[in-house]
Length: 268
Image 1 (tube, rainbow, N blue to C red):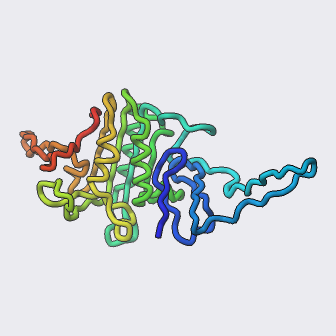
Image 2: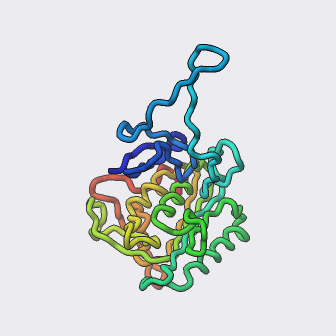
Image 3: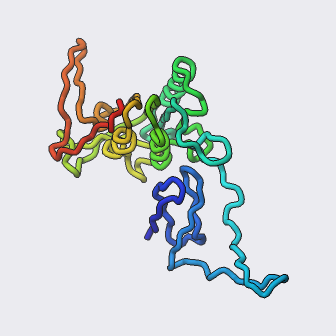
């Protein structure tokens, strides 16, 4: 059974797997070290020793399990306390080619490189504020797994404030699965497929909406470009623009019958 605890710094949910040999866990987002007081596996009380210069007892702290915390893959700040925000322009660009599988796609990584070039050269996004997730990356946090995509999406909106411009680009497979909470008119949730979707599952539109749509405050803009099947409603927005080949369009009301608001908190 997994133990759940929030990061002591950024409050992200963390899991301590069964059989873990340490009561310390390193947050994958901010890399802060959190101590977990688990009575089932807690270490023995720290040893007390006498000081050579007095008869008072002094606490000898246990050695820190991590000498130097590695820099977070989603925080481009210099050493020291992390800033409140990551810059007014930032983007997450994700390309999944499913290489060497039956689901392999051609051109997705090229799409990602072209999008990065556009953002940097045309729209002046700092390269340091663009997180690229592709299978070409050697860093496991930079590969488009379900876990890495979730972390990157959370990073994208973290600390956003009026005037910020955010971009999410995805090129890969999209799919559908049965809607279990009754908020879809057609009875199906739309999904994005990370590299490990066959074992870890897909990322559902409900989660995408909750992570990068609902938190957007007034004055923040998000552009999402999704090149995948079933992508038309993958952000689970309250309204859908239906356009035909002649350019004629109409707005469809996709608000859940439950009355739950699926829009932003004021952002665009």
